[in-house]
Image (tube, rainbow, N blue to C red; front, side, top):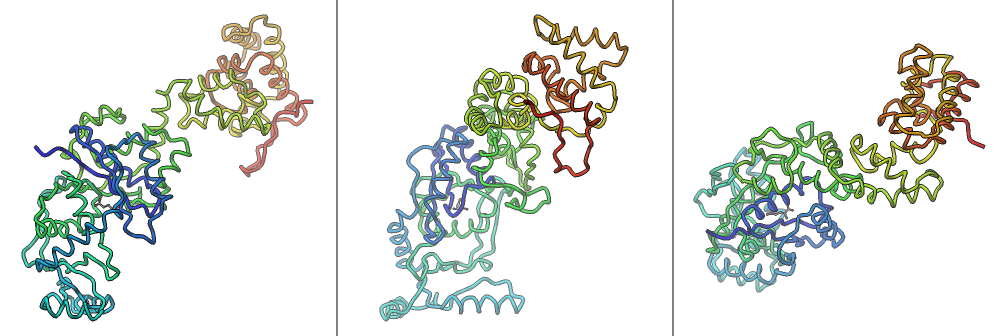
Length: 499
Ligand code: GLU
């Protein structure tokens, strides 16, 4: 058995995109499942478009996802001399040739064939030049590219996902392996490098499947053993078009900044285009490594469902310890305390907010964004619908004041004592519990729903609870039920400014 060595070979011409991540993950899972090695090759031969910034972004994103690799990442540009040597060898063996046909002329020949309705690929007229003629023209300074002389036999390879793939030779151009500026092309570099890095399996996107026959021809011509190939299906957006920025699918770092957790992204992307044959949505990294098999990769494209990823993030969030969520939030909370937005942003209050909101949040930052009432008195009613429905009754201001008075009189403010005070008052009034519970929740949080009311009241503390209830009562008395403007941008004042 050949030891398993796979590679992820990104071109550093852009940030690591969520689609590229899936290829990296499949390579990682395959390597770990087989006790093999995952190598990184930075395909930076396009000098104009390759940037160090992108290379760093790609490596950072892989690290963030926990995709550790083995051995130093390799830059393809460092191997150009070797690529050229083997191009030379192919020319010497008559398997490749200098082609003096200008790119414009080659284009015109291809176009003429297409216009005729022909299906034949480009055959350079220079493939038949004698060695001497070819040398003489090169010596005279005539520019040339080097093309591979595509033989007339069909090309086949066995794809681990799609099975046998056969390409008729007459549909393959005499492709360029070294450009006129003496730089080797991707086609040449990838074969030489995969071979010399002893890559056993090339696992990559299905967009490369048309390159593979050409690469197979190069392996044969260079007398090198071929790796196995597995082309993984493309990822599509919900509109069934190839996933792109238009679908909101962004660079991995953007997901990271939005608060996605690496384990959630990892788990979600792993199951895009790969079925484990179980009805389960969430897998741990260990489970994924344990069951990964090229056989499970689907032939058809996978659809990227951002809503599901968001949901999954919430699931992973609820498995994090309170401490680690607090740690994620501390720097942002400090910023909000500093700019005056969250005056009650103490450590204990953060701990309570995390404890009560963790299972309701999809992103750690939701706790600060949606749970602002833990850290400051609410100044607006966020949930207008709830306000419209729950604050209609003109008796509410008096009831809020009375309940606040009873809370205030409690020597111990616990979930039990607060609940009891509320129940007693409800019985006296002979109303539904909701008639008091909802206005109280709106008073303390500005929200129509949230964590258990009594847990919330105790977390906020007696003083804050009482202050906010009185404040809403006063506001309602002065202004009546808050007007519910249709324009969602309009602020809806609720609490009278304190002091
Ligand atoms: N550098 C190529 C890309 O980013 C990948 C080449 C390969 O996997 O063979 O699409």
